[in-house]
Image (cartoon, rainbow, N blue to C red; front, side, top):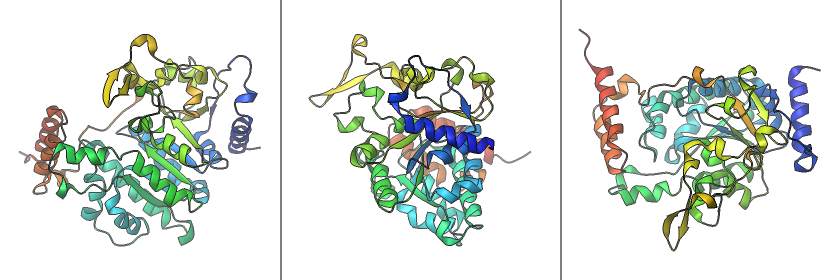
Amino acid sequence: MSIAARTAALLVVTIAAGPSAQETAPRPAVPLEPIAAIIGAFGTHDLVALPDAHGNLQNHQFRLALIRDPRFAAVVNDLVVELGNARYQDLADRFVRGEDVPLQSLRRAWQDTTVTTAGNNYSMMQELFETVRAVNARLPRERQLRILLGDPPIDWETVRTRDDHAKWLDLRDSYPAAVVQVEVLAKRRKALLMYGQLHFQRRNVASNYDMTSREAQTIVSLIEIATRAKVFTIWAPDDVARLSADANSWPVPGLALVRGTTMGAADFALYAGRIASSRVSLRDGKVVAVPRDEWRIVKAEDQIDAVLYLGPAASMTSRQSHEIPPSLCAEPGFLDIQLKRIALTGVPPFEGERLREYCAGVTAPRR
């Protein structure tokens, strides 16, 4: 039996066994070949959640390798992306089908999102779209991949105040959850969700795992509450070695199932990082801090299904926070529009200064 076949078999057995088959004592997590494991997960799940790169080069390279693997398009129909304004869905559909769509028009999809500091994904989003287009060129029409834009369809022409913007921000989990229900599950399709991993929590650590308020809901919690679908969720910790002593000896990349393991038994707060360093609740419409002695503990295995290992923390690399194509920086009006949006939405001023400095550096005349 091949490595890929053994990986898929182990994945199916582990998922099917579920919580009741856990050993008395948690066992060490065992890394699997990640592409085979993810494709295998689609055998038991309609939805698999893979953390968005958010500037991380190793993550970005992995997801492109996954999409290019011939096995992927054989089982997956859609990719749901965080950095994509749904107003431009038609352009996205036409581009990945191979139609003639000017890049200047297409990039509005990731340039005009509700997130005003997403510059680190500009070139990565372009590469993602171009990769899907190239994959589709080799596939019959009925098997071609579709990119679903998950960001709410904000119209920046109508945004005049911070409250105007906040109305769209409030939809950043509920809107993509609805897109998945209508465009994926209702059509009996399968999709890879590519979002920041905090959107994948089944219970929100920031709300002390209390999910009674609308604000605490995530994409995954909303989908699993509203449908019978269970999402296979993958987490990519900043430093896997903090969670498993032997992680740095794992093959790169690797993916480990967490249920029944020492990693799964760990407090999920260890995975969540800074977001877990404070907890709040909503009382009478007001945000109130939860005292430290009232913080709840939830096992990682009750929140996520697997951990993706891309190498030691020290080896991780990222693109500059505003790695925007120089030609875009030089485009009339681009910088002014972005700075205006940053100021309007209340983003810390240093983000605007960093963008200004970056664009000044890449567009400065050579001597």
